[in-house]
Length: 303
Image (cartoon, rainbow, N blue to C red):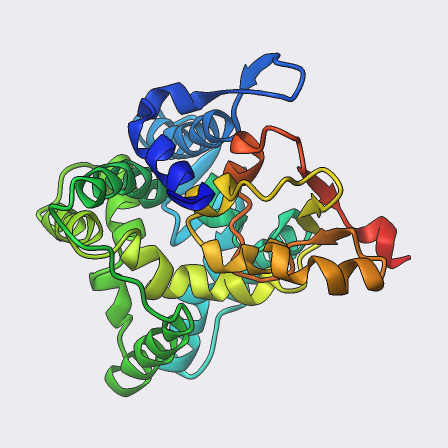
């Protein structure tokens, strides 16, 4: 069994909740990135719940559209749907969506998927079950070209343009869960279960990785985002544990040993994960026993 296969086996056998803690190369235990991310997601969505039910008026609305202390925030893909369906946008929609785009330009594009999205939390649980089933050979792992997400992104925008209605929002699990948290039960939650079962039994994080147009919109921001994960070749021993846990493993293609010779020749022993699909989940850093991964704000390298 090669190192990559061993990493996958360790991932499957590890207790899910044990991954809320990690150890650095000095053996010190700390709260893992997953732990911090779950806290972020829970607190963010709890604010929606409390703002509505006890009227604290901090974060009102849902993840599609909200007000933070009275200031409008609009999901960028929702804003695009409004634009193509109504052939125009209200000033609050423009300001709210541009504010979020500017925010995620600084904090890293698809960080939304790992640190805010409530379905992402469910998807992580489904991923654990999926990997267990694959390891027992009950199901097969199915992978597709992640660029297919751009096809769905265009399809959903075309649907809004042709129908004059926000078609995607009918099946958007993020919006469905966010409305459930804020306003209560809805039969639409059945659809969320269907998507989760799709990811468990058919394709690992299939909705998030291949379909979700919300994540695809943040992918476009991620290519130019200032906050990145930085990898140090000199610390890496190529154990492939990071590739095994990465939900968007194609973004780590560049760290494979076959590129080391060219990288050394160009004196690029430290590189950022440049691909916009990186969700800054930090799982690579959690499992790296040599501390080869670190979060970095790259503005200092651009000036």
